[in-house]
Structures are given as structure tokens and as C-alpha cells.
Image: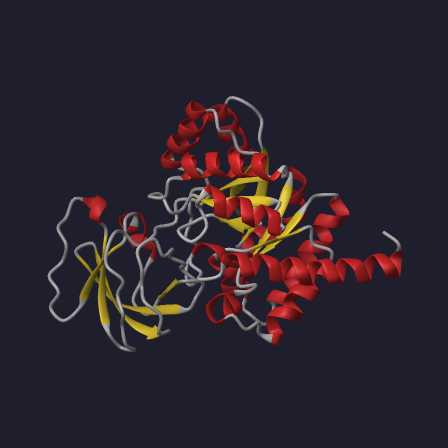
Length: 344
């Protein structure tokens, strides 16, 4: 599965990606400013030119806040920022030595955030610690990480029950746009679910706005979802092991075990299972595959997951096609070994 974005969204590039082995195409709908309908149309056209059917998946982001429009912000450890909600009607706070960072939707979470709580972005690679809350603002400092804080980076709150909504008004508008354009997805993925009820709500909303049934993929990213995993798998049509948020939720030492358990549970239920996040990001950046990345691909194949999902490897990458080809090569090799050993 390849994710479409700035470095992979032209029709000819998508066609080459399909010819290199892509069979699923993901639209990351949390990036609200991206031309998702146009990209979906380009993906369908590219598949026709390549003579290869694809599965088109809309990945809905939930109501979790994302950084608003701003230039990339390079911070050093200890640097102070002020998170504020531009949708709450107030003006941007004055700097006073701290950089203002727009975070639409923050207002609804203020009652759940407290001093010393952590605010994680970029799959936990940027960590802020809350210093104080004042007049609807959250003052915090960078406690870990060195990468830039960017627009559309998603927030994760490890110290509280965030209570995000699975389906939002923006999702309704997007699905109506797809329906009006006559470009219908094969799948809708639901983020940050906590129960089978979330899957049922997402399925009903997708049907209402698209005008027909669509298959629903449940993304496992929360501890609450793990506690009722079998019921969620039963209510869904497929499963995604979304290792970015899931790794932060369960802790990195538990993540390999949780991944294996979810893949096995999905296979027992006869549901397709996708393993996602940070599969070839090192190779995407340097052109040299890390040994750990090759082992990770091999392990996913041996666990018999149905799909791997490439995210940043194809969205913000100098070598999206190379990532696809390397993943395909390793997976084909491991599949061949399995078939020789077991005959299926």
C-alpha cells in the first residue's frame, strides 16, 4: 500500500508505482488541504493505464487536533511554545520568548490537559511537556526530539483519555465530495477507535454519505481497542496495525508482541490485515536500507500479514519508487520461501 502525497501524486508516477508492485493506494485524509478527490481520480486512471486493479482507501483521521498553518518550526531542547486554538475566536498569543503554534481543536481538550502532561507529535519523535494553562493557551517546552514541528503534525496525549470522535463533520464533507465527483473508494479506515461501536458508527456514516456500502478498516492505535480486539475485528472488514500511535500507546517494548497478536487474530477471523508505519523511512532518507528495516519486512511477511503500508516513504520522500521496489523485492522473496516450505 502506497500513500499519496507531494512526492507521489502525479498520474504517471502513480502508474509507475503500480507497475512496481503497489496494489493498494491510501489517501491520508488528515491532511485536509490535500486534493484527495483529484488524487483518487489520478490513481484510478493510473490503474487503468497499468492494467492492474487497485484498492483505494480513504484514511479518516478522527477529531484529533493537528498543527495549523505555519512555517516549519525548528526548536532546541527546552525551547518554549504556546499552543493556541485559532478556531476558538482568540488572537494569536504574543511571543514573550515563546513561539505561538496554532492547534485547531485544542479548546475541546483543555479540560483534560494539566501541567507536567506530555504532548507528542510525529509518532512520539517530538515531545513537549506542559508548563501551564492560561486563558485558553497551553504553554509548553520541547523535552525531546530534534526534527521540525510542521503544519498537519498530529497530536497524541499519552497522559489522558483523549476522547476523540471517530467521524467528524469534515469527514462528512469529504465523503460528500467524493460521492458528488463519482469517485468512490473501496475502503474507509477509521482512526483511534476504542470499541466495535466506533466501527458501526463509521460504517453507517460512510454508507450515508457515499450512497452505498463500503468496506471498513479498523485501525488499532489505542489500549482501549486492544481490550476488545476480537469484537472490533468481528465488526470490521479489515484491520490495520497502526504502529505509530500504537507504539506510543502500549510502549515500544510491547509493540512487537501486540503486532503479532493482532495479525494472528485477524487471520483467525479471516480478515485482511495491514501493518503500517516506519517500515522503510531510513532507506527513503538515505538510499541505504537499514538491516533492521530488512528484518522488519521479513518478519511482517513471516507473520503473514496481507499488506504493508508505506507512509512517509512515499509521501515525503526523494525516492518513493525505490521504496516500493525494495519492499516488493523483500516480500516476494519471503513469500517464495514460505510457498516452498508449506506449498501455499
